[in-house]
Image 1: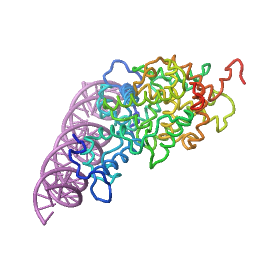
Image 2: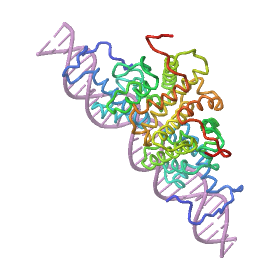
Image 3: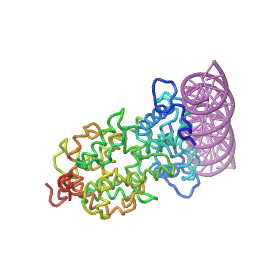
Length: 210
Length: 210
DNA sequence: GCAATAAGTCAGCGGGTGTTTACTTGTGCG
DNA sequence: CGCACAAGTAAACACCCGCTGACTTATTGC
């Protein structure tokens, strides 16, 4: 149901034609992602998404089956090539700040915005996706921090994730000065203090492997 | 509009009578608070609240004017005597853990549940309440931490708040092990590490005032 | 006890939302 | 070209929600 069609009329090109399934699918995805991130699932209406995308509402159900299907597609399919959750050669704090920056830019990025995971549909499937995504993120943090993955360190890594999530949430939803308006770069220092306190200093990457 | 009435028929007692405005008002408040905290504003329906409270739906509009009014009343009027945001004689981490405990108990507590502030109505008034509440919380943290309220320390106090908010959010909405199920007490140690890293050690309270 | 009034009930309206269905228009292949 | 089918459109359906207004029932002061 609502798959890409057995035989697509337009093979690959999205060139200047007025009708192109892949293009409108992508338009819907990015429009939906932006709305979902800023407003949450409930407050986002399908008509608004379609309006932003400049596309008919019915296409949402055609291509994604339902609003929930569209939401799950937002979780699964990034529009631009997905950024590594925790890129190497940077501190964890810097990586978190990178996520904040993506939240800041209203056009997007918005690759793996933390907010997207929250306040999604009450749907069971989405909840499972959310949990797995969060755990994966925490695990990436733990790995980047190095050391043995003991239960205590796993908990601490999840606290780092909680810090990042809290910052993203506050910045996105509450107008609290200075946190709401300060640049993501200015957060790196203090956040790094907390991360180091929780997980210890980052291991030297690359040239000095432990 | 929707005030407590110029001349209340029942003065104070909530004794055995079938009709008592104050009692049903309170019933509505606690039922609403629980729903709002667990489900958020949008997913909570007035009919559900009234059902939980064992009360007719129309009473919500009678006593609180609207669903939004009920929400704001939840923010303003705690059912039980309000706990200090940051109680003295405890570390900030312990105080945060206390908030987590209140989130854990499904009956409640729920005095100043962090979640309540988020995902409220898009209403302007509620947003303002939210911002002021959050700022007040951050300021209480800053005060408890002692030292001069420099802009940098204010930001750091807000990061502590972000950590608490993130933990509360994750525990309430995402089933991520071990964070979701670990006891609030077990969080005190790690959280305290982060808080100390951000704001320095707590000043000695009471007997050794600065 | 008896009106006066507050507390509570009931049914329905109006609006908004997700979704479907029947239809039209464009596109590529033979 | 022209046919078949995909892509897109328009309108309406069905549902749920917040809210309202007229009504009924209990409670209180005299």
